[in-house]
Length: 84
Image (cartoon, rainbow, N blue to C red; front, side):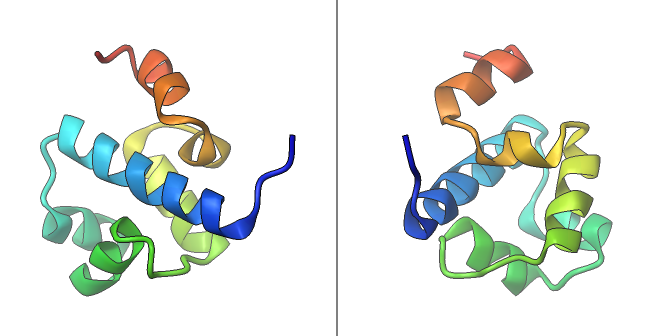
């Protein structure tokens, strides 16, 4: 199965919103932790921002997961995070 850029970008957006919500973080808190602007986090979560590999690694580290897990299907991510 192949995934295109748009699918991955939207999957990333959904997963970051999900994890941020589960971790009870605001966009501003996440942005401060990742050393990026809050509007950038908003853009990523809306699927309009295109984060660099560095930012993806920072977000994954904050969420205590691997960078590739940010791109997996949301159902699989929920299992990894053990959430419903």
